Length: 122
Ligand SMILES: [Zn+2]
Ligand SMILES: [Zn+2]
Image (cartoon, rainbow, N blue to C red; front, side):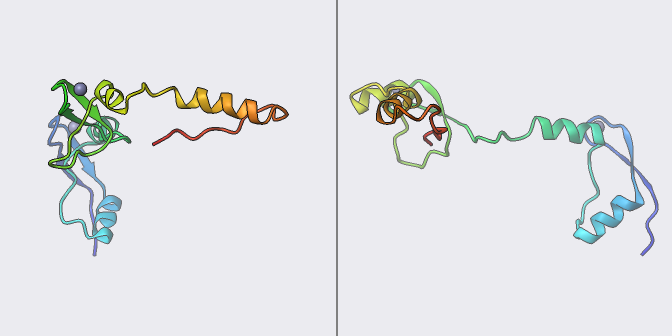
């Protein structure tokens, strides 16, 4: 199958861009049914402004009703607490885990000059 360069129009900015024979061959190989809809610039913009690595969901705290973001998708029916309400429910404020662990490690093994990198609690 022969491919020739085609001129397509960007859906976002309306600029014309070339859908090269090579790209068409790639699309054909991948069995993509649709032509590309965006020029290179808009595609780059989309990637940069795309979904974040950490998913954040805007939700309302079921305790105080204030808006908060959570790093997970809240399950229907399960209460979602904001940070301060979560701490209140735990009874004690959560200490900075890194500092506490580093201190403990320093006490336990004074010989070790450099503490192991402590993984962030998830
Ligand atoms: Zn564009
Ligand atoms: Zn709250």
